Length: 56
Image (tube, rainbow, N blue to C red; front, top):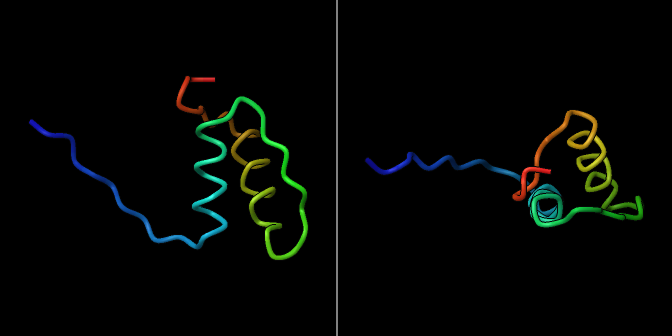
């Protein structure tokens, strides 16, 4: 049986930060408007132990 796909609606900053987080061991994002939410997302995910694609 095929796995059910999950779709979400998000803005470009959330999409970019999600891909950067999933494909990186380290992420350095300079928090400047309009990309401030990218750094906030990465900080929140790291604080909550969200795993990247390699389980780190």
